[in-house]
Amino acid sequence: MVQFVGTKNIADLVASVGLETLLLKLVKYLEQDFSRWEDFDKTPRIAAHAPNGVIELMPASDHDLYAFKFVNGHPENPLHGLQTVTAFGVLANMHTGYPEFLSEMTISTALRTAATSAMAAKYLARKDARTMAMIGLGAQSEFQATAFKTVLGIRHLQVFDIDPEAGAKFSRNLENSGFVITHAPSAEEAVLGADIITTATADKKLATILSDNMVGAGVHLNAVGGDCPGKTELHRDILLKSDIFVEFPPQTRIEGEIQQLDKNYPVTELWQVITGQKTGRSSDKQITLFDSVGFAIEDFSTLRFLRDLVQGTEFYSEIDLIAEPKDPRDLFGLLMKGAAPARERLAETA
Ligand SMILES: NC(=O)c1ccc[n+]([C@@H]2O[C@H](COP(=O)([O-])OP(=O)(O)OC[C@H]3O[C@@H](n4cnc5c(N)ncnc54)[C@H](O)[C@@H]3O)[C@@H](O)[C@H]2O)c1
Picture 1 (cartoon, rainbow, N blue to C red):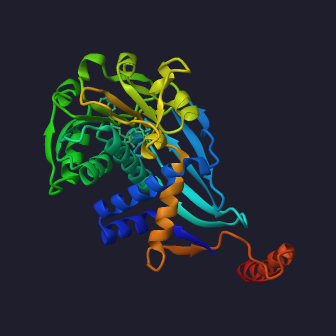
Picture 2 (picture 1 turned 180 degrees about the vertical axis):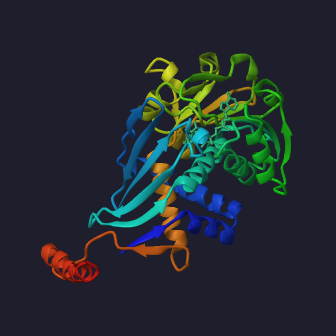
Picture 3 (picture 1 turned 135 degrees about the vertical axis):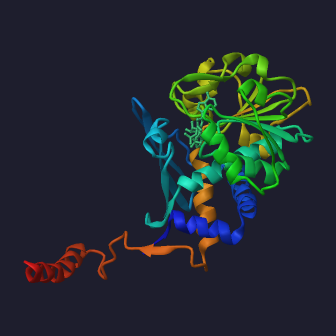
């Protein structure tokens, strides 16, 4: 049997553990895996592009575990009542090859993306950062805000979305969460005086959510929405004046903000900052940019975290995903054993 965690299970887990505690624990799992980056087999994700979106497979493995996530990105989906991003993921045993754990990853991707952003900001933002601007108040946004509050103590949010309904939803969801939220009439005004700027917009184009004049000295940029070829959020000039930190360069050079730069443009890998091999922020004047695209090791960590978290709880079920004949060679026999009662049932109803 394979353990299965669905969206209802995740909601129950969050209710039981508490969202902030859960995010802190997840950051620990991410840090553990980023600290042993070289143990992993890594590859850029495999993308199938449609004119209005993308479906991607994201595999990563170490000596013991293999993980993959199925995820899509369809920015026009909300117009039809559908999520921009949906996902599920699997954890398998490298020694037997058997899948052991299957989870929804739509909510979990929002959790892991927010936890990864906050983890990066812990190393890259100024220690005295207190105010975050958020541009794009869709599905990811409250998760981002909560992770930054939990990990960095951010309480002041200056926010903007082109859709006022998204802004109203954001405030409603974070009511009584301890935030002071200011709704700005434009992205330009939202970023005024902010120490950290998070962009999480969705549009399948080279957009300019932030232009050069909007980003001043000392700011940390958490650019989440540019994660696909032809889909970026920052003006190129911002990249040229920032120190750029990425997850996995071979993937980020295809999908991230840095697709706008020369393929050899210098970037720093986040895992090297976490392990102390490279410097993160070196001065209060520096502009740091986390060019987030989402990498498979983050999903590996999230699946590993969820698997560990649900053990001994009621927050999972077991599903009959793998055939388990008594004699492993008698797969056909198992089929016949199941087929006989099915034939009888069908004959009765005929
Ligand atoms: N880097 C990662 O790991 C990662 C993970 C998940 C999602 N994403 C990306 O993050 C983005 C946000 O995802 P989501 O699920 O929240 O999407 P969503 O569709 O739910 O929300 C996007 C929001 O951006 C707003 N928006 C669009 N253009 C804007 C603009 N010019 N100015 C201000 N607001 C604007 C929309 O009105 C909407 O409210 C997507 O592009 C998604 O692909 C990245």
